[in-house]
Image (cartoon, rainbow, N blue to C red; front, side):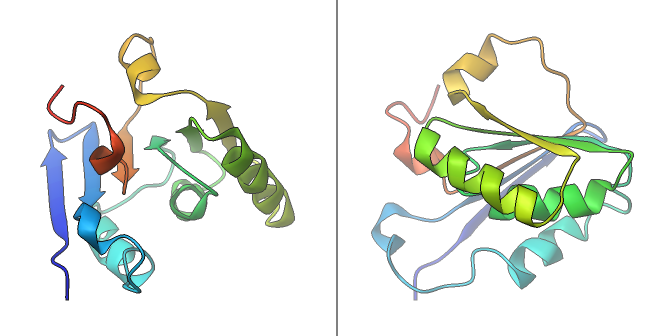
Amino acid sequence: FPRINIFTVSLSTPALFCLATPPQSVGLSMDCGGDFTDRLFSRVANFEGLKALDIGCGTGDLAFRLAELVGANGHVTAIDINRDALEVAKGRASDRDLKNINFKAESIEDLAQSEYKFDIVTCRRVLMYLPNQVE
């Protein structure tokens, strides 16, 4: 069973949750979301009203959970470079009637040069795909 590494950096606010699985585990059936993510998020007492960023959102699973947690007074920005995945995510968000989330076609490198300000940042199953993981 592949090991899952959890990196949590918390500077009171903002907090960064980065869930990474080793590349060799891709394609295996394992719970990298759901209960596992909820247990990690339970370390933050209250998400209500926070501004969240989900890096590498894919089709939106983690972004949807964040949207529920931040509530109507919070907001989620979800970014990914895969425009097809973003279109699927937008449709799924609409089906769920989530109005506090928006999806943008941006890379993690674009983000480094932006003026965004967030209370919490999540990144799940992304870092292993970056060409230079250290930078």
